[in-house]
Figure 1 (cartoon, rainbow, N blue to C red):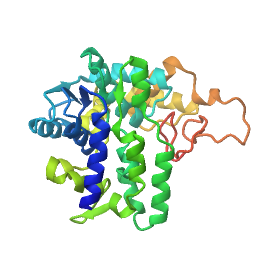
Figure 2: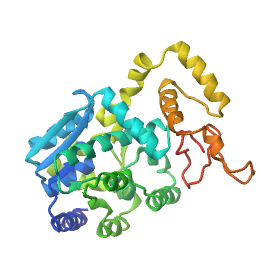
Figure 3: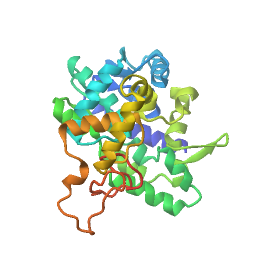
Figure 4: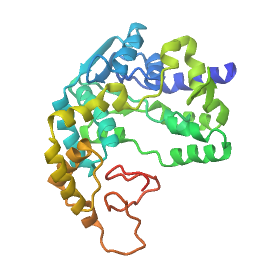
Length: 320
């Protein structure tokens, strides 16, 4: 593996050296940490809702290695998160909590980078798809052929919100893992190199972890894979909404109202997002042009399931 690691590092070094990039969104996860090491940007930005979030801790470890000259730890308020989530709901016509809580972290990071006049912001998108970083893939390890199909499906359906944000804000971004050379290299890595066990635990992106273990340190490299919402602490927005935004009696009334509109509400957080959705849009079922049985509909919100994935992009329901 050593020679293959050297080959990968040389490819990534050459990609990152083609242009100057002065900023990075740094979560302290494997992908952004690898890129911080290669690029050593002038500015790194970490978004977290409190000092207890995993990203706050791990990004600090990377900053101490001096892979960035200026590390900006941005602590965001619940109100700031909710305001930006409303913007996302209107822009993307969704009330899917997972999409909203993951995307809002990146959106706020992009806005801060814009305010800082960063010329080129580096993003770690693509590594999870190309090198099998998602935890849900672990359940297919006993069936390599099916696992390979799942990975290829992820690659074929890659769609990154970061590109849409950059276009909207007029911010230049750079996604090294999505460069042609990296995509081609990933095809040479075996399934076992992408997902393997260490100390009895499965890890995705195993190849990348082994390549950078001596550089980044074991604490960073073997960090548990976290979605943006969990790493930033935004995942706990659910409890803030439950305790401050919707009463029990209001939930009972509004859940029944949503049901009459064809929408199955899962909890107070889901209801809160759906109420914002309804400020801008009619119930999802009313967007269906006809009642033809040939149209695949989400069983939870009656919207059209028009993409190849197995969850609903409108309400987040699974399976769609």
